[in-house]
Image 1 (tube, helix red, strand yellow):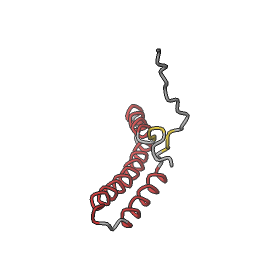
Image 2 (image 1 turned 120 degrees about the vertical axis):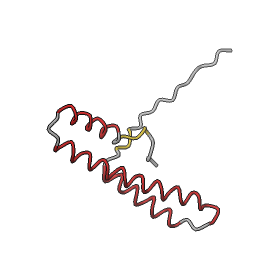
Image 3 (image 1 turned 135 degrees about the vertical axis):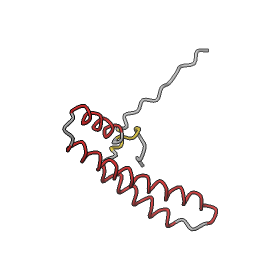
Image 4 (image 1 turned 135 degrees about the horizontal axis):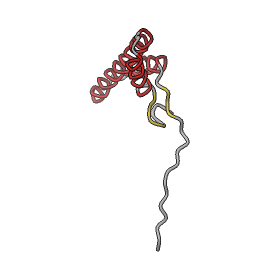
Length: 98
């Protein structure tokens, strides 16, 4: 008997991690973390608070890098910063999707 290999084909588009999205996720995670009151979920609550802080910090860093990229006169530096911003602006397909 020959087994047919099946590959998952995804058509999901990546989630764009722009500054408003990162700020919204940070706020939602922070609010949801505050709603968790069961002591058995304390570690999860703390992780959610940390994830919310990380998302907020990433939004801030992306904004500041964008400002620096606009101000710099060095073409190579500007390209490197833009590359970093591009890398930090897209999540894997399906991440952050309901």
